[in-house]
Length: 158
Image (tube, rainbow, N blue to C red; front, side, top):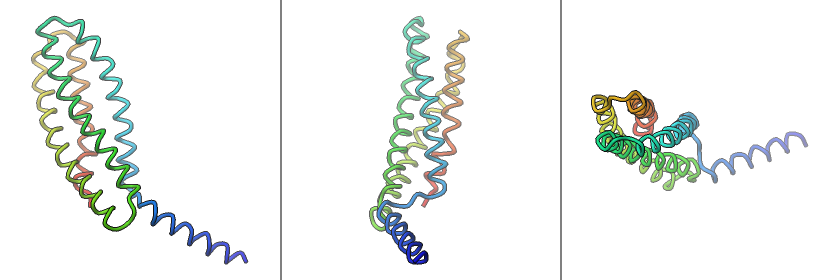
């Protein structure tokens, strides 16, 4: 009887796993890192907005320029998280392959956008004189640089 219950439990587990999609080991790590970065990004944006509003015209332009480029990348990163969730819930077969391919393609696009934003954040350092503006620039640069590993892993995943 006990062996029968174990066998039934194993069959139910396998059936549920097949229907619900397969979460790969790196998916858990990637999802966790994307979620952690999303919190840091939200905090950065909340800090950035009031400082931009209070800045002088020239500083405001430079801050908006930095903010716009980083914000655009972060929207792409957020979409990557959505695609990762979809890939994890896709059933085995064609849906899974299509979703994984879409995730990989979008990671490639997001990686391109990310590299451009990193260059902009790095070069914008010279545009800022005030310490609070430099801190925003540094924080944006670090957040962008730190998310690069996840994007690269998603682009390389099969």
